Length: 78
Image 1 (cartoon, rainbow, N blue to C red):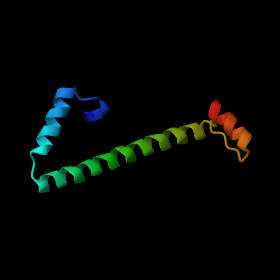
Image 2 (image 1 turned 30 degrees about the vertical axis):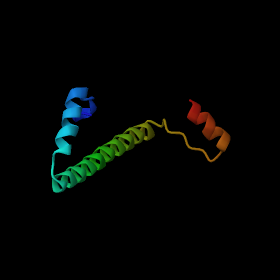
Image 3 (image 1 turned 135 degrees about the vertical axis):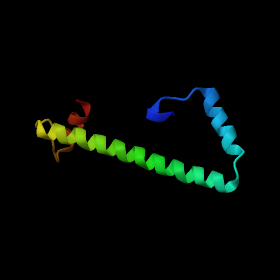
């Protein structure tokens, strides 16, 4: 995936893979650490967006809560 989530053309992706193969072990390790950091940051952003959307729904009174399993199933189907 490219910056912003768009898919990279296959040729570019394969070039990146080949370039990574040619790196030293230390450089590959650094790439691994960077990827883990980037994935954490993206996941954190996704969680925050979901939280913000839920907060807006709550403020509008659109969130529904229940401890009844049948009602929860119905809410999931909506």
